[in-house]
Length: 320
Image 1 (tube, rainbow, N blue to C red):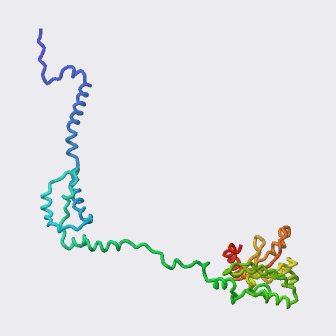
Image 2: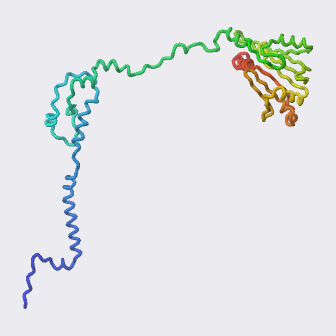
């Protein structure tokens, strides 16, 4: 019987030759073990280490920006930069440098005086940076308009201006009641005067409203009713109501071409202190006749109208 040949010790066993997947699995396990064992070494070798050099300039610049709260004694001479760098041992980036280790670079004597002013000079300049709180001036406590002298208030509501406005016919604003009534009586009319004089407290301007009415007055050849209104014995409005609105509207268009009709049927024209208003276009229309609109044409001095309204606003509550 033949003796089996001896197997070489480097030759793999039969199960290794037969099961090839086992060989691949063993190779993979071997590579994973090598990776886990060598990975810490690769991480330590690739970690960045310039943190120490970045922290050093920041620590050196900090004392230059921190103000001193109390006067300090004269500092000791600072070692040269090369000697200071040699005497300071290397530090880790995770450990911050103590306050005593933050040494500023040596500066010349002139530069030190410019960077840090003396304590006395800083104390003098500090209040100048805060603006003083503005105080109200004494003039703001002046008396209001209502407390003005009574004479000036009286004059404001009774004054006759030197430039009157031409109203209807020959009449002008600021004319007195007596002058107008006398002129109408000389013309043969019988004017009717209606007065409304309110009782006002002392030191209050008067409020005297007078209305003079004349019938059968003729203007532009048309007969009608004339009404003149006065405020504190000063004529401020004349109004004419014609008996024949169609003919009077034709005369208005001829004598006052600047008085244009508006969409609402009323017309208005303002020139300086004069205001002219009319309702003739609406009164002669079918809508105006159905509404029984009163035809009129009036002239006003806007200054006196404003004074009348101003008196009602300022003094009417006290009179009531």
